[in-house]
View 1: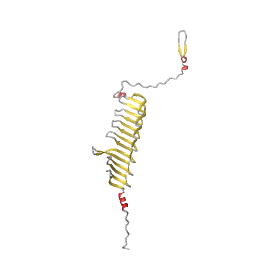
View 2: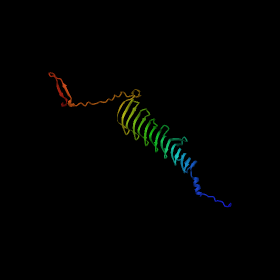
View 3: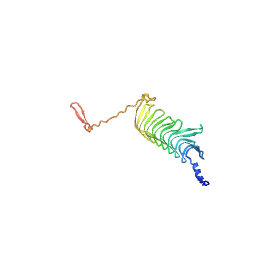
View 4: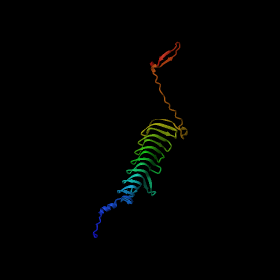
Length: 249
């Protein structure tokens, strides 16, 4: 009948409010009670996609990829500097499960930085570390320490090439004393040289060479002739010769 109308189906207010509160897709800045804020893409109430997060108390800012509420992909982490009133880059590179992972660059100070591999927030794999003193290390890392094969170039141009373990020189290695024109090659244990040889290396170009050149090291092969079969012949007056058995003397 024309006067009969189908009643409208209304959803419970609780369900409607819940759907409106669900964050999904690109949203404007969402503020937290503690002052943190996030601007970017959401999925099922979690940061997912590209977005920018600001942690007010920590003074940190992250701009990059997110996955299920965690930093994952490529991104840049910056820290707020009160004196200069601006954010400065701390790390740029790969992320996984909210930790630095993959290839990335970390800036410790203006003149000290690391670029290379990361694993679960620690330097791992191949990497290059520029120290504030001017020293440079290039080589393998494991759990934030030099481990494996690597080269350390000091600020005075001297350098070490060889094995490393737990951040110390270990195993076979070479240390080039370019300021003195000398080379040490041998074995290291726990950062201390234990056994090796020293020879001249680039002595003519060295700024402070030693007073005397290092003699060349020669290998001596011992003679293993049986002493029992060795006989010395000594001529004497009035006789033709006398045989002396050295084994009995």
